[in-house]
Amino acid sequence: MVTATPSARQTTRMSTTHKRPGQSLGTLRVVLWVFCLLFVVMPLGAIALYGILSWRGTEVLNADVLDAAINSAVSSLAAAVIATIVALALAVFVEHTDLPGRGALRLILLTPLLVPPFIGAIAWTGVFGPASPINLQWTQWFGHVLWNVYGADGVIFLLALHGYPVAYLMIAVALDRVPAELEEAARISGAEPVHVLGSITLPLVAPAALSAFILQVVSNLADFGIPSIVGTPERYTTLATLIYRYVQSGSVDNPLQVVAGIGIMMLAVTMLALSAVKRIPQRTITFAPRAANAMPLRLGGRLPIAVILWTVGLAITVLPTFALASQSLLAAPGIPLTWSNLTLDSYREAFASPTTMLGLTTSIVLSVGAGVICGIVGMAIGSLAARSHRRDDHALGSLALLPQSIPGLIIAVGWLLLAPHIGLFNTPWLILAAYVTAFVGLVVQTVEAPLKAIPDALVDAARISGASPLTAMRDVIWRMGASAAVTGAMLVVLTAVRELTISSLLLAPDAQTLGVVVFSLQQAGSYNAAAALSLLITVVGLAALRTVTRVMRGR
Image (cartoon, rainbow, N blue to C red; front, top):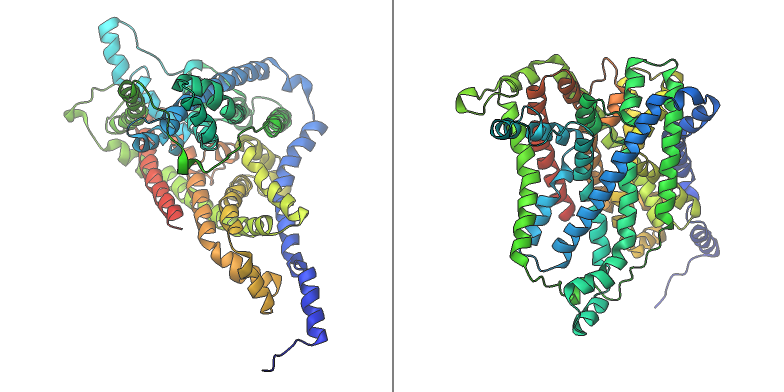
């Protein structure tokens, strides 16, 4: 038998290729670094640079700003504390005990995660607003309303309601990593379930709970939709709503300089918070796969606890949905909910408005555009970050993920500062640029794990066959990771089409998005039309997210 051996030149070329596997990816790296510099470093750097160079301490630290800062701190901290405690309790009961019906209950309790916060605020005004059926009936019985959602307590309640699902997911992951051997040893030794939770489980998930708390504070600090809808009618102003007022009304001289000063302080708080999260020690170590040998903690009074949790879950799901539906079918707020008063006029009013159609068209175009750009770029960045051993590739991935931890309010302010200098002021393309900045990390996160799971042998086979590094990446990595990138792009589209914070600050006469249209209807007093649009957005969003979830499971 005669075997062919490669010539010395071929051997040298193959050896050189394996020693320098990334040389033909140089152009791709340069393009991706330029992209991140333009869409990540430039807007965030603009806030820092402009805020420092044009610092106006008197205006930035005036009474209005200080009052708004205090309100933001109080509402953010209080809501984060409530959300973390609720999430910890729910995660322990649902994920770590033998509570009946845990699977369905989990879906019910996580529904606030799927509803945009500003739409949730509109829905709850229909539940506990002054003219809601509950408060009207309570007033007839006792002479006063049961609870008025408008004001500081309403802001805290809604921030906590829409924040606890994220904390729940973070704590649930930590619970899944708690060593089953420790809990089982304690139970074998005769420890009661409460003692096991207090001495073993809770201390091990405490770092995750603390991380969730800090991230909730940052998220609450920059939320615009909830305080604007629920807080503004009672003159409860936060930094987010104050920035919106400064930008839109021009109530201060040189508003961009003042806004940049506020933005740089919020950015500093955000970076300090993220640094604190990274310094939190992680003590949970998995000794064995929990699903294989772990037994859930047995509850003594399972039925009463299950009834309470199901009641709460159904209340936070059914009440706001029913309020939106009933409000959208009535001619005006406060009208009794009877068959004779039901009408579709609110839907006709909402969709007959040219502003609504413009907002719908703009949102679809911008969200799809952001999804396509983020899908392509996120796939390329994610493939380098997941498959390469180079430090600069990992730094590129970290840079792309940075905006995921930055509030959308700060990103919007950064692009607002850049807009006059790059010719995008008062154009919808400015919103598109901000969407790309805010959501490209979402695709990178989505594709990173599937790309890491691709066997190295497939890439090596392509390289041995003579493919260049770029060709191997295109034919193997990108092709196998395409479904993950499509899923990430779909998540970007669904997130962007319902977004409010960024588009509310960057809106222009021809750049009204769907979220801004709903917000404008609510602010103008067209509560029923706003409820009609909100209900449709919620239903379509939930259906679309369910489709995306099925795609992700079937991948």
